[in-house]
Length: 218
Image 1 (cartoon, helix red, strand yellow):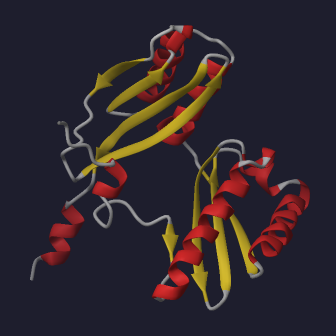
Image 2 (cartoon, rainbow, N blue to C red; image 1 turned 180 degrees about the vertical axis):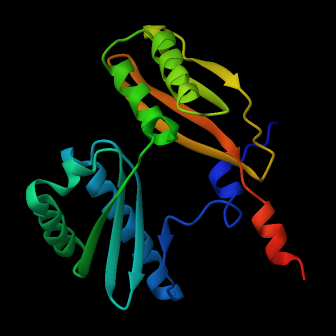
């Protein structure tokens, strides 16, 4: 059997960080974990959060700081910050705590695996041929500076009666190299024939270890 590890969790602490940052005792841990899931699920369903890749949550002394990483920050902020104020109020009602919302722009969306996966999923829902959607997304990522990309689809692709898996790869994606910056994400396309899963791996280069070596030398 093949042993597969999520590239993001595999590189935690090395060149990846936690999406939720807080400490809790055993009694509170489960409730806070569910609350984080509720916040992310609630925000991802909002129309203004289209183009959102990651939602980071940080807790400190009863306050919750939510950072929305999106390729369309203007949509989230709204006119004169009106949408931000609405989000603060709604999240405060949802959690019963004081919530602070920040927006972080993703400057190169073609190098973000979540945005690429969601883009392919939306094209499949619009009945665009899957090979064209995959190759177009891969070419855009390579043109943006990616060193390698792999895209995999699973399900009743093209309306076939039997589900199958199709994948394309361009460049290199060294999944076993810890210093490699591999961005991994999944997406889901809801078609008339059923759900089609989308997986994307993007190799964005190696972590710069020269600074770390200099810091460790006496």
